[in-house]
Length: 330
Image 1 (cartoon, rainbow, N blue to C red):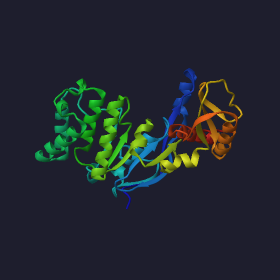
Image 2 (cartoon, rainbow, N blue to C red; image 1 turned 180 degrees about the horizontal axis):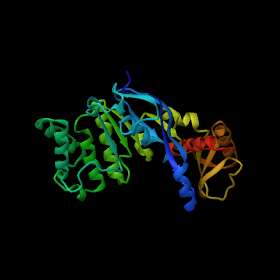
Image 3 (cartoon, one colour; image 1 turned 45 degrees about the vertical axis):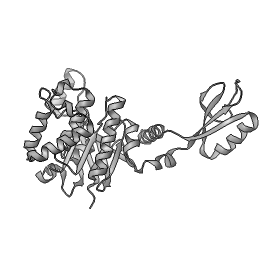
Image 4 (cartoon, rainbow, N blue to C red; image 1 turned 30 degrees about the vertical axis):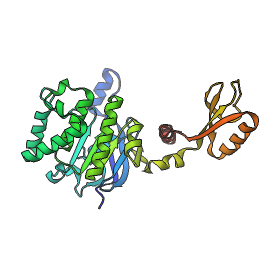
């Protein structure tokens, strides 16, 4: 049985549409009109034990809504889901003790207390033995390099230090499933890298199921072999990260370096993405790369050629754009 399984999971929000003016308010007392927003629309996927899956989508795509349904914070409008064999919105204690939800823009630690005291509260809630508590906190704090910050008021911690403490709090009870919503948002480069390294190490060592949402493609590239892309509440892609480029990228980037500096016109060879007197980057259809290289070599004195794939960030942006174009009204 998969650790996480969703089948046609749907969440519809109804919002009251008020007409303008006093008369509109009076009419609203008698007859109201509502707009429906499908935050999740027939979402289906399954995740096996030990998988670390990237959950991608633009703002408002439905990512957080799906995570909240899988963690039991929201009841769905339709469909089914099971997490570790349990229906999450039934909120059974057996499941609550086996998963953790970390929202990058929400604090779970007490702002005016040292981090250790918030962790002590979690210890009492989950009934963790003192020896186990000291071992787990000590090990996680050492991995995240925050041993010297455990007795500092949470409000006095930097954003990166606070996120590391949030990770310790989320993993204190050794969950089997971890939902991460933007865990590196707002972090500097060094802190974000440390968090990624920790998540990679922890996932490998504990075989914990992890669903990660992030707008930073560096998080996804370093952590996730599989990605699920959602937009307008619907799954658009589910598969290995490295197949996204093969499936959706229709072009390649060809970088030419020339022996001499000169003004050159490359508009006939492809789309120019960058150009200097000594080099040029051309965006060329995949099928036309060899022909373009031959044509440029025949016309100019080239010292180096480098053929690259379109960056994953650009490919995913194009996927989102295709999804919006497909769902736009004619």
